Length: 303
Image (cartoon, rainbow, N blue to C red):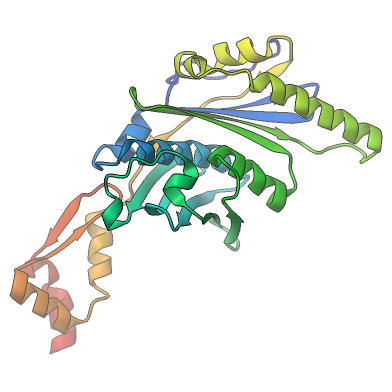
């Protein structure tokens, strides 16, 4: 693999996103390898195996999608349906700060389902993009393909009209998740000859990427893996981007939420329970608020 550009070689080989371009082709790629950030998302939840694997795949997929955004902002990818999982959601931003959650229906807490359709049932994928500047955008696609990777590729096909292929890998024993994305970059004069060349390049790179093995993506760093896959191509590998778990909950955010409750209701809860407790759905941290924390909310409205 020639013409490789790496400006920072000290970054960790896991919990990173790598982006790369094929210099002589209108094709781009991404590689994501997750361990600690994924483990942080699932550690406080007693998810069944199939649920935590799917949540990990959704996290890897969201990382890949976030990297396709060309602005500051965040993206939320949510799966919902009539299966054992009521909904599953991963949220990430352009800094690759991620959080995620799965909500199982009460009678399905110990489900042994494994596949996408066993877990979600008949359902949809909702992708919400919120740029810091500009309007939010939401896309909805039915979960009609067999795997999450195929559903995401279908999303690009119908919403962006960009040929895209995605591969997702999981190792539940080591709690690792990985993914790869290959995408056509339309360019040129729009002539049929140019379009044929672009499609041929995309299929060629897709076939090479399809040879990737799970043990390779979990054991090799990006440079070694890309060399193994594309050693006959000219590839530019850009600086890796670190991926981290960031729940986002805080004492102040909970307090702000309580401030929206009517003063008499706050007084009633304090009288009955001596405190108001709020537990974050994502990390399961519980925040307790007592009279002294809340007296300003009571006094300003009740007198």
